[in-house]
Amino acid sequence: MAWINDNYLKLKAGYLFPEIGRRVRAFAEANPKAKIIRLGIGDVTEPLPGAVIEAMHRAVDEMAHRETFRGYGPEQGYDFLREKIAAEDFGKRKCDIAADEIFISDGSKCDTGNILDILACGKANCIAIPDPVYPVYVDTNVMGGNTGAAGDNGSYQGLLYLPATEQNNFTPDLPAEKVDVVYLCSPNNPTGAAMSREALARWVDYAKRNDCLILFDAAYEGYITDERVPHSIFEIPGARDVALEFRSFSKLAGFTGTRCAYTVVPKSVTGKAADGTRVDLHRLWLRRQTTKFNGVSYVVQRGAEAVYSPAGREQCRKLIDFYLQNARTIRWTLHEIGLTAFGGENAPYVWVKTPGGMSSWDFFDKLLTQAHVVGTPGSGFGAQGEGYFRISAFNSRENVEEAMTRLKAKLA
Ligand code: PLP
Image (cartoon, rainbow, N blue to C red; front, side):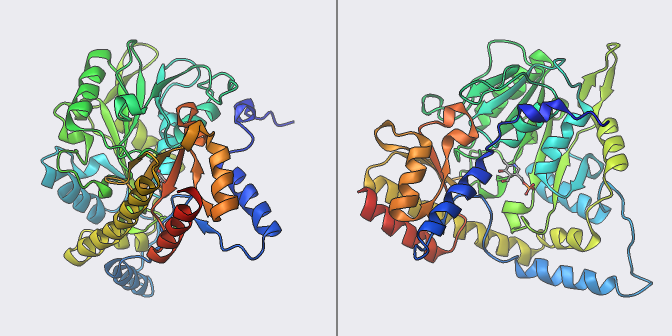
């Protein structure tokens, strides 16, 4: 008999997106004529940049000849891409990150989950997670046995939740107690809030004082428009001793279906072994990746490299500007209607306060049934998301404008 990982049974059954899918399908079946506009899931809609497509075509052609064919590549990624990232994403921002501290992967979702492989599981670490936030951090900690059971509001025992609310501008405050690991996500999914340099510096200082590891998720870095907002935690002095950073090409360059991301593990970040010795996490992550991962395809890595070419940069900029314009349209409309909305300036998400204290799911049902517009209930991102609703800017201009016209008609 195979014994299962019982921790999976602690996961809440109706994970957010399947539940949204179920409600939308039921509505569509009952109302086959309704043209439903989906501003729920954070998936891009526009095609890959031309420079990426051309680079991938060239790479495919190389695979057709014995002389240029590639088999297994380095698990950590090809040097051409790691060096480009080190120079362009970090060197140009004066961040001290070397190419061999960059690990190419097929997604930040996998990396933010897999990183727990190299940390002690069970109750050894005190783990802090912002609330609300990308649900993968909490769920992977549940799977890894780092939590107790879920309470009525969906929060798990054993995690320290860091409220990100209107009162603190959706930037988690430092905890009073000492934590061992903290997740930070900036710009944030779902609130769209981006952490200021000062806020990030406070966290780096906290991490140094408390021997805490920061897991910094910058999947939406490309959407930062405010010059005061750091693009990388490594812009903060001292961060390379306490932080890892996750980056993705998904939202930056439309790679959600193409799959390419990377994780920065500076050689100076260490953790403690059971016998008290310090061990650098770089060595452990390298071991983990070379054992459990066989690298991202050559063709895809060539595509990612093209993101940094002059044409690739310009095309990605246009792509992001396009989504940010959608976000502005959404925000303006919500303000016109008289709703309170946040985000959408340094992120592709607008975070709306539900009117009259309505619950997140009631507001979801209202928009679906009255305007045929799908968003994401805030409570799905954590207990503090209750009473909020996420609207994604990832859609065509036409659909966003049509959705906003309907919202005005139904909610104003
Ligand atoms: N991190 C955050 C905060 C996200 O919102 C997402 C996707 O929505 C990811 C990571 C996943 O990125 P990837 O497509 O690279 O797995």
